[in-house]
Image (tube, rainbow, N blue to C red; front, side, top):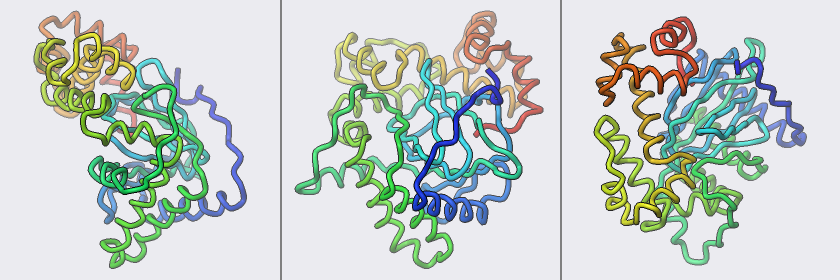
Length: 314
């Protein structure tokens, strides 16, 4: 499916929310002038601007809050689709290899959004505050979700971005507003999702340790028994919780990591398909080509040729 074929309807927002979104659009426009991602003076805060829809690009989403001020994006996690726009935010609670694309953007009304990295240690410290409210339960402990953004969260995000206009205030005020943002997330629809990640010994925390290991050792042969020992789980329990959180089995997760890196090697380092496949752990060039085609819809060489004339990942 092409980016143009995805249809996310414009969502209605209140007048107050519309005013805050307009301020957010103006702020992003001041600091993000090109089709790219722009780091800011606030650690972990990145601004994104895009003037046209894009094809799906494979990227690693790390724990973060993403808020769209204008336009719309879509993320595919395994077989699941997450749409987010000015009325919905995306939260990622664990490292996830996904396909991401811009689905609504024009030169006159570019996609304008921001991402704020989530500090697991700060989440844990906030949860440990005496009297901190219990989270609302979630039906599926997935490590990603798109939910409707409330005015308190949106207001805090706008105030954080507003600090970019007064750099001297960033070291003092940014941590306070970030804590407020974490509070709204932890007491909202994603509270249980983020709490599980931050609590040492929880299933989500142990699965996060496994994903960290897989990211560092993706080219090595995978032994499920070793991962189970790392997670202090049985093999069956590891499979169950890993898939519940990431929507993939450990083997599928490793495969996405391998293919993502192989794609980067071919595109950035100009490796040929056989060399890139071998570098990420494939002994068989034909198996690499089959699995690559299954994920990206086209063989490696043809895919890279197309990507060389398309915009970079988002």
